[in-house]
Length: 262
Image (tube, rainbow, N blue to C red; front, side, top):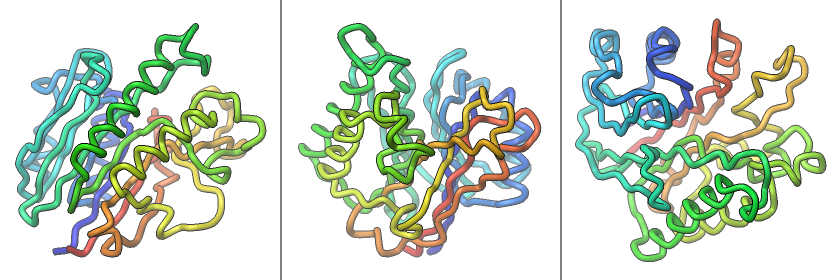
């Protein structure tokens, strides 16, 4: 079975329902993982999704904040949800496809503005989330799994517009990158996107603060697709749909795609 998966921080699924439907009509991924849905599950608009054939969903939600959903036109069953760092936030949900592949959808805390947990509680929460995720993978190494989401870390020098200028900016600090790599190593994960696009700058997020985001191009790769070692070689055709950042009233993130032949 071949299926295409997309991950997208939508920044309110109800506010941007039209963009979700546009993506599904024009790009037609088999599975769409959304983060920052900002909606209780029972308020996620389903009519348009169902009309396009996306009749399966697992989700965790809360009013106005966070929220993750896996929307699919392929049958799937819920495979759990964890509250890493005991934050009480809707930041993780998992689903299993009929071919046995488990998809984990994460929205890792952004971490606030100051990269110091002694003065910024949110940064500590981010590091704790990553530490618990690492420890979970040490305890039970995943197999036949894909992990996607807004992980809020740009790990490589070519994942940011200026490595030197962002070393002390949350999302690219050395301690965050260290935690990111420890999570990857603990789970035996492979970076599906960089397996396909190994060299060159690559971004999935551009700040709303930029007057002309496209020309300034001060982006970061915060959105990721990982695969466990046993299925990593089945992944291909990775891409970032950059033009979605320029749609009307867009999210500040662009969707990231990958296809798996399994």
